[in-house]
Image (cartoon, rainbow, N blue to C red; front, top):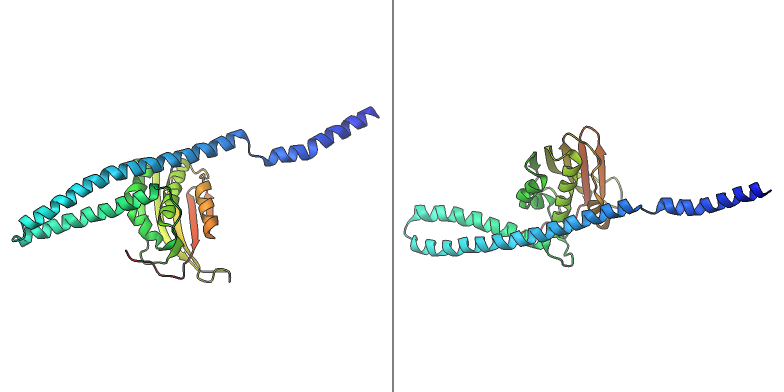
Length: 248
């Protein structure tokens, strides 16, 4: 009789308590998520600091270009070369402005934007995030489609995706990012989806940690798919916006 009571007590103690313990994330999982969040926060701060420094450099270049253009206004050939320099400096200033937006802590400001434009603007940051031992190929299809999202959030999502894939592939190999459209298969999203696909191949093919990317996709009404076999293939699909991209 006593043995049966003891068995019943043990079963009762092990039932819901064990189930609840199984559902709770363990300490290592929580610590790992915290460390990833801290790493992304540090990355944002570093991006902001470097962008401020380069912004000062570009300001000096543009300021001196104005003086040179005035002094060489009678030399068409020199002015042509200066215009090329100005074009490059202004392109750099635009990238810096976007990096500053990326690192700034502010409320999201959704607008129609082309994911391909974000990939283009962050090309150098993407290659830096991937590291020197990964060959990066960027194949954005320009003018493809628009999504309604905050530029800085999309940019951070792209960098998080690259960093996660880099870690999962073993820090060396090849990585390709391309943009496509995905036709709608549901009346809930008749306009279809804009898709960013990352294909990575390296000495490892672990499943990447994509918590920030998946969180962003859910908020946008999108989805993330992952396949990790001989290659790591991650596709981020975001609903296509009805509005056109705003040209700035």
